[in-house]
Image (tube, rainbow, N blue to C red; front, side, top):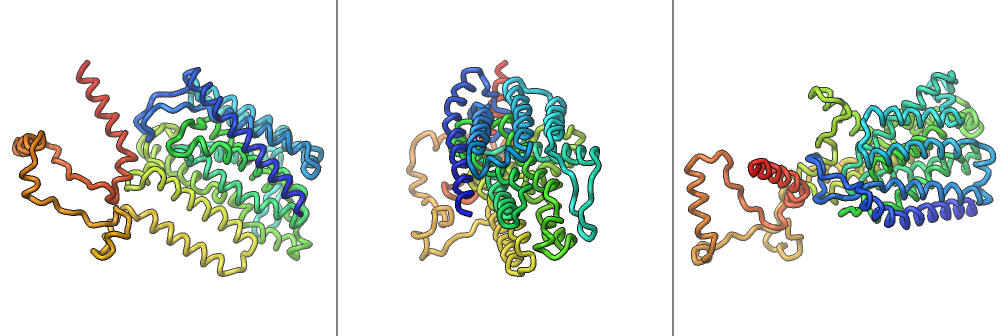
Length: 461
C-alpha cells in the first residue's frame, strides 16, 4: 500500500514542479506577444495581466504522464488501457483552441465546437461511458450513440463550468484542486481498497490534475501575476471530466457485489458519487450551479447564454462586501464541503455523524456568507483586543475640526452649495478604515473608477 502512494506523490511533485517552473517563462512570453487584453467592465483586477497560463499547465500534464509511464506501479495503466492516450489527445486539442482564444478571442460557438470535437476524440480512443448504475435497477448498458452523446455532454458541461468560475485570482485552480483531491480519495479506495483496476486511470488523472493546479496557484493567487486563460481553464475542466467519465462509466458495480452483498446493493453503495459525477453536481457543484444560474439569468434578460456579465457567484460575493481573498476562501470552503462530504457519505452512508457534520459546516458557511450584512461592534472593554473593523468609530471633536485650516475649509461650503442646488447624487458618508464593507468596496472599486474614466475621455473628445 505504501509503494503506490510514493509513486503518486512523485508524479504529483513532478507535475507541480514542471508547471511552477514553466509559468514564469510563459508569463514573459505572453507579455512579449501581447496576450494581455485590456481590462473589461466585468473584470475585477486593476491592471492588464498576461494570460496563456494553460501552456505551463499542459507542460505539467505531459511531464506527469511521462513520469507515471516509467514507474513500476503505474506503468500498467498505460499497458492495459488506452485512456491516458485518449486524455492526452483531447487535452492537446482543447489546449490549442484555448491558446488561440487567449491571443485572438475566438467566437464562443467555435470554442463550443472545439470542445465537442475534443470530447469525440477521446470517445474514439476508448474514453467513454459504457454503462450507468441506476438505483433500484442495477447496471444499465448504453448503446454506442448513447454513451457518445452522454460523454460529450459531460465534457462540455464540465469545461464550461470550470471556465465560468474562473473570475477571481486563484479561484478556478483552487476549486479544481480541492475537487480533484476529494476525487483521488474515492478512486484510490476503489482501486486499492476493492482491487478494481478500472479505477486506476481515473486515480492517475486526478493526481496529475492536482499537480497542475498546485504548481500554478503560487503565480495565480491574489494579486495574480498571470491568468490561466481559456487554455488553462478548459484544459483542467477536460482532465476533470475525463476522470469522472473513467470511473463512472468504466467501473462495473457488479465487481463490488462480493464486498456489498449484491449488485443492487453495490449500486446503492456507490450511488452518492456515481450519479452526481454524471451531471456533474458533486465534484464541481459550485461551478455547475454558477453555470446554470448564468444561463438562466442571461436567457431571462434576452441575452446570449455565452454573453459575459458580472452576475457570477464570485461577483455577488464582492458586491455584498467580501474582499477578494475572502470571496475566494469562501468558494474554497463550499467546494471542499460538497466534494469531501459526498466522498465521506459514499464511504459511510449509514453514519449519522457525517450528516450532522455536513449540516453544521453548512450553517457555518451561511454565516460566513452573510457576515458583511452585519456590522457587530465590540464593547468598550474589548476595544484593544479585537480587530480594527469591530471597534467603535471615534467622533471627531468640533473644536479640532473648526481649527483645521486648508482646502477642506473651502470644500465644505462648496459641498453644501451643491446640495442646495439639487444635485442628484447625495454626498457620500466617509467610511473609516477597517469598517466592515471596506474590503468589498475596495475589491469592486476599480469598476466604477474605470467607468468614470471612460466618461471623462468621452467628454474630452
